Image 1 (cartoon, rainbow, N blue to C red):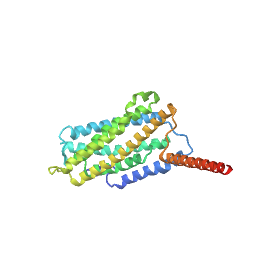
Image 2 (cartoon, one colour; image 1 turned 90 degrees about the horizontal axis):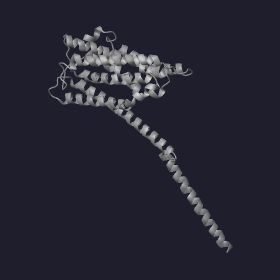
Image 3 (cartoon, rainbow, N blue to C red; image 1 turned 180 degrees about the vertical axis):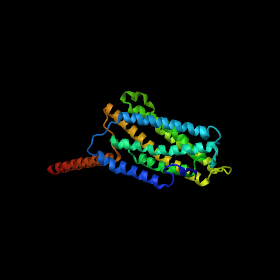
Image 4 (tube, rainbow, N blue to C red; image 1 turned 135 degrees about the horizontal axis):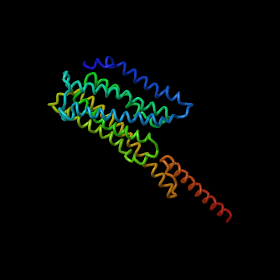
Length: 293
């Protein structure tokens, strides 16, 4: 394959090794290192890092358009060009840069660990950052072009928005008023997977499309998995936000805080028990009066 000339592309074990180091650090070494330490602020570092990611993602988005999707690529179906033509090589080089960018994104989680933002280190976050370098290695090695690069195009656009948000957030609380669009970020990520599913399905069911049906199936499966994961995260976050709003509203109106199903059931049982005891006491008193009479 043409990609063997690039560093780390000769064998997948190199990428597996980097992912293993990443997982070891963010799940074991990092938390152990930070256990008795105060969280690092890293404000300036985060601004620079996120600005770099915005610029890199913007560059890759532009290159994906210029190397194919805005020029000679067919949106309905585009097979991989394995020739030595200038546009084919341009897309190959771009795919390799995209692969390297996924390795730099390990820093997202590392910064969370150093800042003790454990709530941000979700299963979805770790899974996403562990799987994408392996996927993009396969992309560069065997599929550097055509339909396989459509998800990358969308992902670069999403990352421009996402890292710009992170950059603004890292600049300080005085910029919070400009981040009203935070709630749309997850929706944008979900939209990218919906577009990937639609695009890949169209290529998969078309008898005229020369792009690999097997690879299309894998791309569809991958996009579907991420769609489900991000949708689940979105629904859980939305439900949590709604519950917090209801709790605040109840406190402001002087109402007691909402109870869960188990607490309500226990309360009803206790009330029934108390009513039963009161009834039994009343019957006992009546019986005593009859005896006295």
